[in-house]
Image 1 (cartoon, helix red, strand yellow):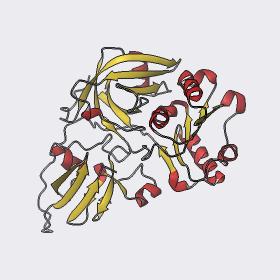
Image 2 (spheres, rainbow, N blue to C red):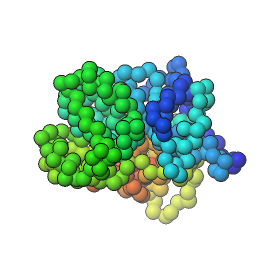
Image 3 (spheres, rainbow, N blue to C red):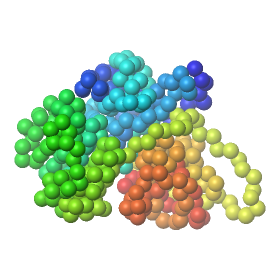
Image 4 (cartoon, rainbow, N blue to C red):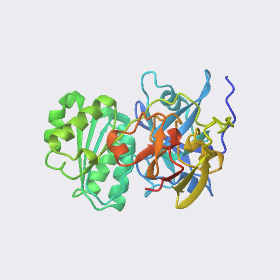
Length: 354
């Protein structure tokens, strides 16, 4: 097995408490939260957990899995994974995860999270995309007051993850929850026109949250557009494979003076109700600076390909080295990626708390 770099001080360890078979090709993995570590694993509905999975080729791989548990209803963390063709991480977990096993993880993160659980929602999911949607659904029903319409697409009835839980939630909240199961074996693959006609009566002014394979989300977004939905109220969760090692310790190398005479910028960062002011070398991403100073800012891939390190630019000017995940609407709202962020002005103000 290939040696891996030293683990960062921000890496946490969890013990698997239980593995639940949801369908023939999907399992939920439940983790105990160590006593005294509750703050390290505080999360909001829709966020994900990054797991370090053993690999004979590379020593380990990092994979992100949405939390299907609800922070308002559950005392343990749960991720749900579905076996996929050539899906190394998911297949390894489905084959090997067992109670008592310890796994290295990063803190929960992600911006696929409602700011207000009292609002009316449209929830759209396909296959294992139900995972973060389930967390939002259960939390909104338990803590919110709004009405929720869910469309959940699968190949057939045997593929429906959380089928019994969804039936129970419908029975408990008949006036607040409407669930439509779209089965490809019965109705074929949904089209934008079909989804648009279906959602047209409820789409106006509702926030929509969607997760699933890319073709489904493209169709769902087109369907929402046809239905008259406000496109600024559509939220999507997209995952890509992590190629690097986000679990490795951060090392900031000293760089020679480039002759510009510019010293480091200053960053004022609001995180977890605390304000930090740090010197920010102009050629070093903000995330690296924060982690090197023991400030546990959220992150996952370090490559600009996930939303884990997303934060809000409050003042100043910055440059993103790479953005592979934020859509134009999110950038317009001020979202930036901490792992790809360089300063362009002497002082920059950033918030992770919104």
